[in-house]
Length: 504
Image: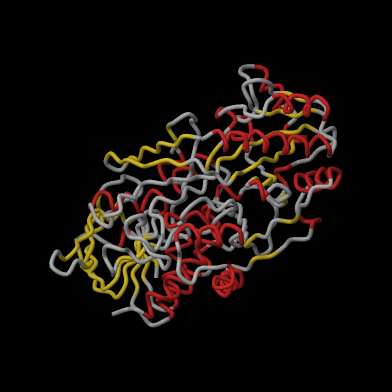
């Protein structure tokens, strides 16, 4: 069941088989597997538990309740851009666009070769991928239900002869309200709280909300995890309600690319390789806005409903996108009356962009609860982002856009394909200022079979502490190139089954 701070006013202890830190895609999937196998499981979640009625149009509430650090995490390096991480029971699945791509075969093979991963291939992962797809209800919506922001993108792709398709999404009865990033008010998004977490609770799992882990205790003689301490806090005042000590036979960390390395670094454990907090990747992205003569009304469209993998061999993925007006306004170049005048055409906007599979990398450092993310984009990735911006604008112009706004330092406005192509023929690297965001942070506790070069093995088991496991996006050896939630759940199912079979 869900346990809330108001239930407690004094410190207490729990004994369990497995304690899971984090109730997002990885932690939820792992809790489901272990609880279904008869293991006693306790889940600790930094955020709260929400229902559709809690999800409103209030962006401040959404950022405060559903995003870590209020959505105000940025990279520091040659580019300064936001990188967002969800929180709450459901984690990032509460605020993503429900995009549910399976792990790309070429990336799985690359990871396996790079890390010499055992029993790790598209074929060996396939049964777990299929379990995830069934459990979270991945569906392909009919094009007629996507809204004009997506169909106009489709038309542009077809005119250019580019491949494309409807984005697979974990939804059930999506109403295309365009508010995925603020939580799904209709309840159509099949986020982790609705499937893996609910099934785990049905098997006896308790989920403690607003619980911040402060200490992990390791037995120095056996070098095994024994217990952890967490603070349960009041979400309104942020004051401590009580302290919780959990004694368990196994510890599963699923706090994501920042939360998991933060715990390991603060407790000075599992880092004989020196790789904890290193190798940060984030799928940098750029976007363009097209203005059409006809009303597009993207706010009545699926947020990200159509994609093109025409350039995926080059590590570029094109996707539609939509955002509330306040967020969209930030993408219009210029200051003062210029952007204000452009925003008067809001109902005629269409939006799309490019996400790349980056080879750039960064590192994390911590001061208290605050994280600093250092990340430098290399020339290869800057060129890919530049091409991604060009291809995005090309698609919308081919679809009939009269004006394209592209946030870049040299030229921000295009009104014809000829003008666009002439510009990008002369400019192959527009520099880091074109990066709009870099979500899907990953890689900070990477997997591999060599303990000198990795933090966990291919099943998520720590090389240093054998009853400590990591089942989240931090274990990815490198960037995935597509939205990661299905891959996170896939690896968590696989790892949790292995844990259950090696429980002693």
